[in-house]
Each structure stands twice: as structure tokens, then as C-alpha cells.
Length: 461
Image (tube, rainbow, N blue to C red; front, side, top):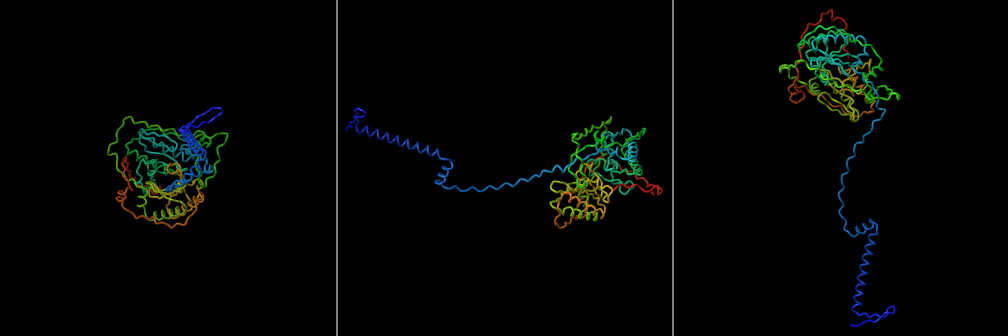
């Protein structure tokens, strides 16, 4: 083994060849490690996008994933402009009574005294109506339809059809299911008829008459401002009805308070002795749906219905939906028109303010006190071809106000042939319900000719 002699800074060194080779190998290994560390440092210093591009260039391209289906766009909810709403007064039963004329108040007092002249009869006044109870049984009601005082009895209206009483069947209204026989107190003759119906009702329910001193229920007329302060008139914010005048907003000096809520109705006082009603006091009665009444109606009614319905659906995005009691025509989510039967009379309801039509040729009725028709309070009875023409004119006014354009649409044939009630019962268009048996009226002879010769006050169409 050879030795290498060298002088390093005056120091004599002697290194063998094997030791030199070992030093060189170590130095080479250190250099390699430094190069690897330097390469790693450079790679980490590069931007992520550059590294991804270099890796993507060397790697095999992956198959592209299938594009996911785009979700359907959600419907755009267009906020209703604030000017489409208004503050409207809603009058209670007592407010309408106070504002009525003296003839109405006299008839009300006379008939109410007759109703309370029986044993354990009592009355309770709520915001919309007055109800007469015997125990917990509601036997009679008062309410106003527009300016007309009406009375409702727990009697079956069917036997009175074609008689002198001229009652109306309002059993399709949930608020009057137990008192479906309605009489309009439009004059002294109707006042007499109301007392006769009260006598029939009390005789059937076995309620004896009592000696009772008549009371005076007269209330003088007062300004609407006073009634508003007492809560007998409420201001509510509603969507503006077509044709209605713009109501002034409440004065800024007096901030608008929340409407006074009607107090909860107290439970009627139970009778001293609770006598259960025997089973024979009930009966099964058929309740006809809107479609059942339509199918059982005559061809003239069906022709008017088809004509008016085609006129209503000849506008953009109008659609109809038939429930058990009525048919409603919508534009979007807005109910604009309704059909229903009152007895055998086909009636139409519009989302119009009935006040501007008072005293006009249309003879519409205000049914805004009925919760089922608050948004369509303008009622028209389709009793003939003239009323059919009026209905189409009201449809045009309604669509013009709501800015619903007309469209080209072929008229549809809505005629449905008459069928038996048994077939309608099987199809579920007539339902059998168990109810308390209503009293049958006692047939009375017609009034003498000299008494009927007088001019009767109109029942009010």
C-alpha cells in the first residue's frame, strides 16, 4: 500500500490510497444528497399551477365525468306592490244595526222579542252575527247581508219551496249548517212570516212559551268614527279590490293599531239537567256536492254555466278547481271567480267590490261577511239570460282591472247528463251525514186574497 506525503500549512501529512478513496466516496455521497435536497426545494418553490401542469403533462388523461343535470330554476316570487293594498273598514253586526234605518230596527226588536218569548231562550252577539240558544242548541241567528237584515232558522228549507215564505237554503255555508233556512226581513210581511217560523220551530222542539215583557232594542244612529273607536268597526289591510275608491291611509298623528281581536266566545251555559237526545232524534240526510247539484239541474242552468265558464277561462293562465261545495277559478294563486248553488239557483262570485254596483242594473249582493267568500264578495244570481250577459260584463271588468289579457280558446262543452241520486251517492258526489232531525213545518192555509192583493216588498235580488 502506497502512502501519499503532503505538507498542509506546514503540517506534514501522510495518507494512504485506501483512506483517500474512502474520503472521495464520502464526498460524492454528500454531494448527491445536497443535489436531491436542492431539487426538492426548487420543486416546492414552484407555484401549484405549474406543478399541476407538469404532472398533467406526464400523467394519462382521466375520462371526463358526465355533466350533472342543471337544477330547474326556482319560481320567481314577485313581491306585491304596497299600493295594491288598502285599509278597509269591516263593520260588525252591531255597527250595521246601529247604522240601519228605523224600520229595520223596529222589525229586529219585534222579531227578537218573539224569539225570546219562550222558555230558557237566550241570545249572544258576536262580531258578525247574533245567535239564539236553547241550552247549547243554536236555533236562530240574525246577520246582515249588505243592508238587508236576515234571519236563519234550524229548519229544513226544502219543505218551504214554493210556499209563501220564500226562504233560501244556505246549508253550503259552514257558518250556517245548523241554521240553513234563511229569510230576508225586507218588510212587515216578512216580519209576520218570521214569527210564524219561530212558532213552528218552538213547537217542534217542545219549547213552551212564557210571559215576558217586550224590551226596546232601539239604538240611535252614531258616527262611524265613534264605532271605530269602540271596536265595532275594524280597519284591516287587504288587497285593493277592482273599482274600489282609494281609501286614505290612517293619519300619521294617530298610529294604526292592530285590529281589535274578537274575544273568544264563551261556552254556552249548560242546561240545569243534561238530557241526552234519544237516537230517534237523529236522521241520515243527503248532502249534495256542487257537481251533484249541477248534474241534477235543468238544461238551461247547464247552458248558462257552460257559457259563462268559457267566457271566464278565455283569459291567459286562468284555471279552475272544483271542490265539494264550490268551483273556484284562479289566476296564479289569486281566486278571482267562484261558482256555487244556493238551493237550485246557480250563483257566481267575483273579486270585485260590490259597493260601486249598488243601485245599478247588475243587482249584485255583498257576501263579504261570509269567510268562505271574503276574497270574492260580489255575488250575482244567474237566474236567466239577462244575468248571463251581466256576468260576462263583470268578467270583462274584472280581467281588465287585474290586467289579464284575453286569449284564443275554443269553447269547451261542459254538459253532463242528469243521473239518479243513487248513482251520485255511489260516486261520492252525495254524502250521507247523521244530523239532528229538523222539524217539519206545519202546513198552514194560504192567506186570503184581500191580504195578498197588496204589493209585497221585494225579497232583494
